[in-house]
Image (cartoon, rainbow, N blue to C red; front, side, top):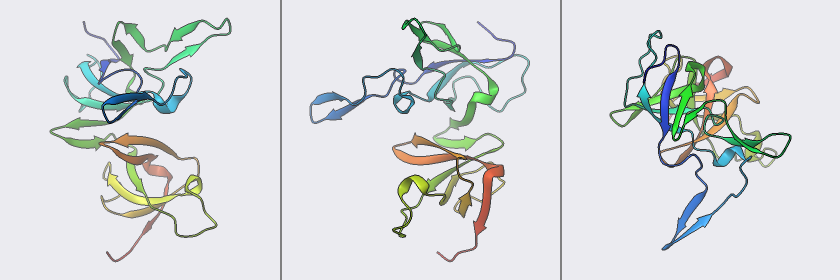
Length: 182
């Protein structure tokens, strides 16, 4: 099965990441379908589109938008799949819904995106939700990896990559690159 314009993917694991292992038991941390924070956003590429020139290859692990695997309720309270649903555990993903790919255990963001590890804020006036600074972990080469940067409010989206909490930030939303020692 091939697609002309879209990637065909399957979730790595399940569509929702809402279970945590505590000792020898499994604990469900979220029972609501609507909550986006529990939706899996890691997929494996089954097929690449025929008409799109891309660096992503068949078999790559990709980081995608949280709405791809998401389920929701319509106005009649009927549970529905996202528009990306194709069949069983197969989904169609548009190119602009992919943020990074993993090959040979290395994450590489697509053009226009950086992934920033947030800093713990020392200032009591700022809480964690207002934090707008961090260190670049993965970059599209607009900012060097390891740089301390600041970005615009409402320009970040939280992801968990290899067990670490990071923000996906559009490269053009990075406002300051600090020159710092160490």
